[in-house]
Image (tube, rainbow, N blue to C red; front, side, top):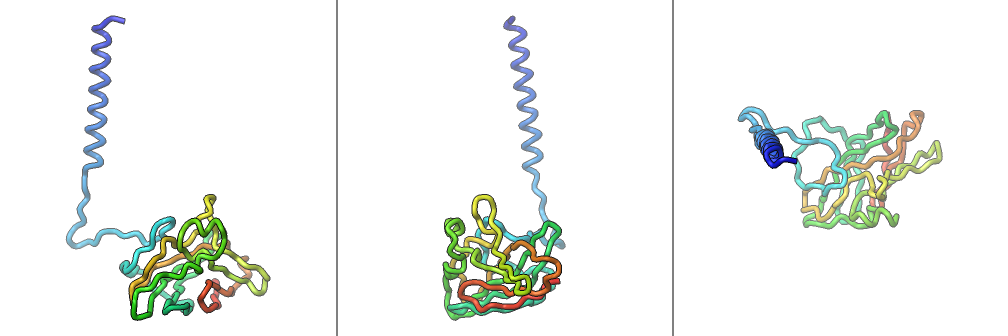
Length: 194
């Protein structure tokens, strides 16, 4: 190969590489600033595999209370929704609140005692739904690595604070309109399903 051809080829490759980097930088460097009249967008979905955040702003959706269950050390779990989806899942959403006078750690026992779930820290992995009519118990779903499909990374909740939580279960049959919700150290509660 002749040196003149190799030099032109290298210059061409370098020029393409520089142009690509410039375009990439221009596209990534642009910041969209929220207008003064419009608040920045926030995510309202469940946080899978991430730590739960305390004191997060209330969602804009009106919340209905399906059940309030009391646990130990001043903890309360408020369940606001139980929604079936087309994929065959039932997702519960709500808030875990510390009603005591001081910060408290979420009890480890609420994650249950399954070996795979224990590896992933404090979560609500011990929650179950019981279909009394169908005589079936439903456990919180797990992903392929054994992580429970529920809020994880629960730690200390300050006095009066709450943490948004979710739990995902296999959906009971459409004919099941009522289940008993159970979580270790908490009172059981009856949930109506639509």
